[in-house]
Length: 129
Image 1: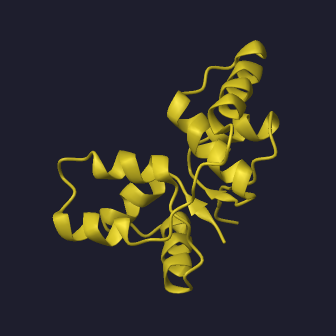
Image 2: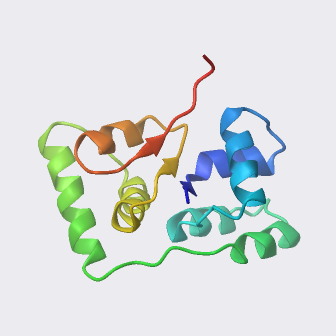
């Protein structure tokens, strides 16, 4: 199972085809993708998202918040800030959902590599080798 961040989904929805989009398509095909609720909210907030695509997104299996989620997310962000890094709250929420579920995050966003340094988040950042 994997989850996917917003930027990879946006590339996918726009018809992109890099390694991240290929991995997303593969996980959709094999039914191994779990939708992060914060990614879903970001995607659904786009006025450009068609109703058909919105309906497909809400049909994906969704990850749920565990008890004391916001406390853990706040403490994680505090730890990152204390080390001198600034990370957006939504990125921390996306990461915390994945940490709690022990599900890797498919991402292109290098902010998640910082989060990985301060948590047990496993990120999948694909590169051409």
